[in-house]
Length: 238
Ligand SMILES: C[S@@+](CC[C@H](N)C(=O)[O-])C[C@H]1O[C@@H](n2cnc3c(N)ncnc32)[C@H](O)[C@@H]1O
Image 1 (cartoon, protein in one colour):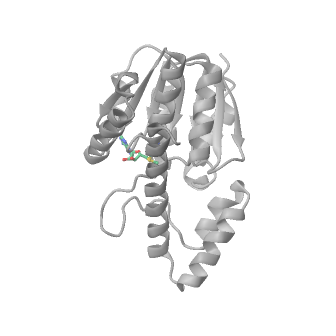
Image 2 (image 1 turned 45 degrees about the vertical axis):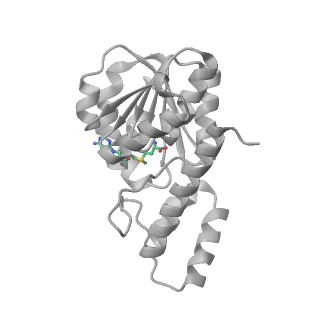
């Protein structure tokens, strides 16, 4: 039998996937049959080709609302969540900063790993009030509230108020904000800190300035993992 935590995540992943499929269907001009074919093709693509594929078929990942005007969850996939959980279990960060928490799917993976290790905290950030309410309710359902400190509001303002250092920063806001936001959190990093950023391939054009900044800066050792939406994995060297 699935644990209630696993069941909750399963349900949240299903909701998010259904929203993304609905949005893609609304953006696609062809028949249902053609849409299903394109969706199947997408699933078989190497991750590094996904951004260009989406662009060439006219799908926009910058459309953040459903056709009914409700904000999309845009949660990390279950595979990405498991990856984040494993990073926490191996690196044992005691302070995690999550930039872009939405309804808390990635937050749940972090918080559950912290509960297992019995030490640490996630500072979660989210602008949308409705998503924050859902995040709180998801944390409550999973009994993980004590491992998460949610900062509601514009993340650019939130990070200005942060002090101390973070062992792990996860970047999952809108892609055009990656570089300006990263520049604001660099002061919170120490040698050995890990920075993970999602959507490096699916939002390849928008995140390019961030990627180039990391690659040119000897303070960081960074690589893009050809996994899921394209995952930047950077370590602070000095
Ligand atoms: C891709 S979603 C995050 C998904 C989340 N990590 C998960 O796995 O469920 C990006 C989130 O960043 C939030 N966001 C975008 N710009 C923001 C800002 N300036 N301040 C705070 N949150 C912001 C959006 O509201 C959205 O919920």
